[in-house]
Length: 374
Image 1 (spheres, rainbow, N blue to C red):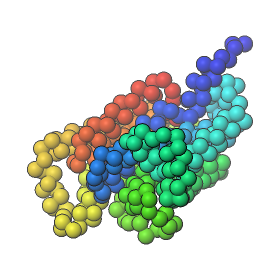
Image 2 (image 1 turned 180 degrees about the vertical axis):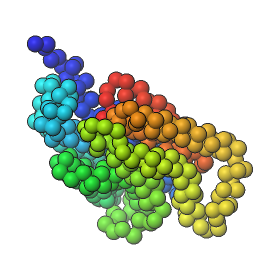
Image 3 (image 1 turned 30 degrees about the vertical axis):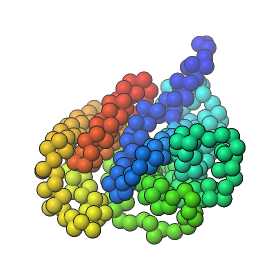
């Protein structure tokens, strides 16, 4: 019997956590954060930039832990099913134990909640420390200051708890109710993107560090914050629809409907995205036609959008074509396509962010060669 080395266990653990899909998580959160921070609000100082980037990094880490932990928990719960249908997976093959993977998953989810709880405080504190080079005494004085503790906001943690609750519920019950499982999977991505938006909208720009803590209320939630998460949630619903039939023999029976919905998304995003910015720019009396006129007079933005739109459409078409012969291959390609959908949404307004999303798309494809995406 072949000896199971630490390296083999570690690689199996990475595969169980679906790290190949982490670039899609980063892309979703990045675009949500960018929409709120760079368009709805504006960075005013270099310290704003520093704190905002640190906050983004913390949120990316927290969301990555939630995603990896959720995937691990799902595999740990499905080990009996996988023992029959997918015996080569790490847990049924004996490389990893279901109990160990489950324990690791709950540890990652707990760390994620803690990071969300202290995200604003940590970002402000690190940024202040870098700018002021404080002594140990000054650090202790700052941390003991009542105003400093006001930077700890509960709503990021509560959104994270809601996301983790859906993740855990999905892991335990997705085999029992297929339709409910699809809704839960779409809700996970919706909440993931919403968290990226909400962190900026509610936490970073709503109050400075030394003001009173924000109350727990929903008055800060507006309809524009739901448009982009809804698009990503719908895309998730479509690919999860196919993923839920992977273990079933035969071809996917609703390819035409699936294809029509998926191929329409990049074009729908061009219609819905200006609604976000038009709502926020109401004081300047922006309209949809004025927004479209602006796009046509920014050659770099327009070129970036049309190129990104073409790449996204072609990629989705190729993924749908692959569906004819392999459901897992389609799901893997569609998962990487999250980054391209994100790029299409931001391309008319920020070619640089769109390029980051495309880079994350390429990284996702590279990681899929190392570890499985499904």
